Picture (tube, rainbow, N blue to C red):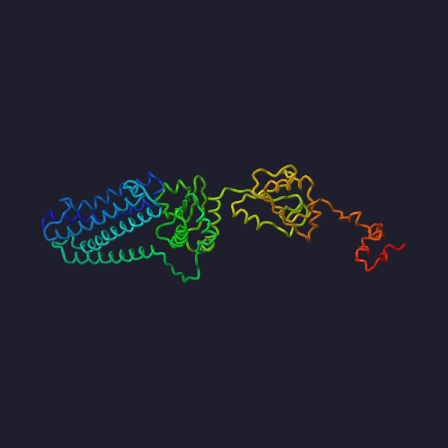
Length: 462
């Protein structure tokens, strides 16, 4: 074997290592350093140079095999081109690539499907081009210093690598196709909550588009659970625009929505953004996934509904009143009610004399609630509440009859009601028992219906 052939073999043996190092740098730049523009290209730039050298170098005459090994060189050239096409397809699947080729237009669901197809394509091409090269180079490596190369042995190794890659690609395509179906069978003990009827009705009533972006890695179990929930909701109304993004693959979008970690769902409408943290590890995400529907509904209401204000009166011993310093804590509380109001996008405020209850109800009040007062309202407070209700305001009054007399609480009058003077006399002109000063609080006997016209027992002289 001539010195030229020997030198050619020595030079060609560095092509595959250069290509593999380029792939690792590409992974580092596009996944780890994706949030740093300068850091990203510091890794991606050299990566592209090494990938180009490892692939296109096989077509340079100085690196080409001669003689019997020429057929091996042709195989490596074809495999290198397949892998290079996979790298090109990867860049087309990025946000910049989709914009450059006009693939970022149309509904969000179509854009996401196009991006998913491109991800499958570039992953398949990389697998079909890279794995056979590794197998072939492993078989060719001991022959680099030998006088002759066994072409059939290298071809068999490349074929085995290609078969293994094709099997992996086939399984991936099968899983991808199965994931597009709407059928789902769940026999596990743990189950993600499904969209409730109330959540679906809120989605169906959407009049303006609401964007929902879930940031999860491409291969993640929690991502699949969240995607199934969001896809079911999106079918209820096309105005709910659902996207599943990889935060590292879409750094600009993540910065726009102020997302700094994976496992987050963002609901956006105009300038209003609400975030829901789920997590990426199933061990920690299970608890959140069980309550996903109620949590998502709460965030959705905050996005689609204008913030409303609920005022709770204070200063009359209401259940929402804080205990006075030195008093024992009350066994009554409105904490659950407050949480429910806040879940319905209400801002809960207090309303007493210090907040103007004696003059007027604040203009931003959507609802005023009086919850179990134990002390009477001042006359000016009652006048304010009555005027608020008469002008169409929403007034909710909940009285506790065991705590205080409802009449006394609302009127501020602690004295018992007296019968009318005209009704205090009996039909025959005999004074009623109530007309005589009572010696005690014992009810008068005249309160019982008289059996005859005989004067009541209480009317006899003492």
